[in-house]
Image 1 (cartoon, one colour):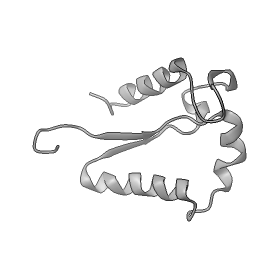
Image 2 (cartoon, one colour):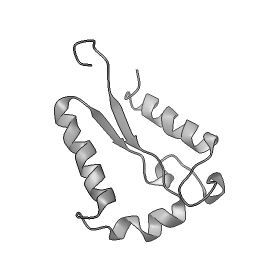
Image 3 (cartoon, one colour):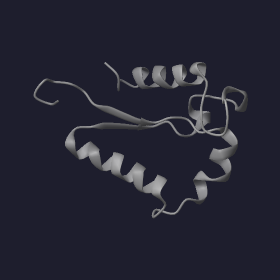
Image 4 (cartoon, helix red, strand yellow):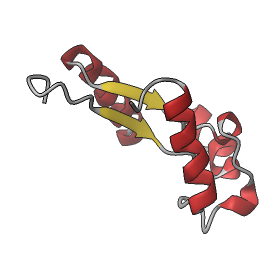
Length: 91
C-alpha cells in the first residue's frame, strides 16, 4: 500500500452514549476491546493512521442516533467520516 501511496486509515466508530459512559472508562488494558485499540495504535508505526472516534460526544452523536447499543445511524456515521476528513485523515 505504501508503494502505491495509499493512505490506510483505521478508526473506532462512535459508541452509544450510555455504553460509552458505563463501560469504556472501566475497561482494563487486558480487555479484548482495549487490546484491539492498542493494536490499532501500534499499527501507526507501520504507516497506518488511527483515529479514535469512540466517544460519541466528539462527533456528536446522541442516544437517538443509535439503532441499538452498538450500531449508529447513517447520519451519525456520516458525521464521524466528516470528522476524519476535517482532521486530514481521509484525503
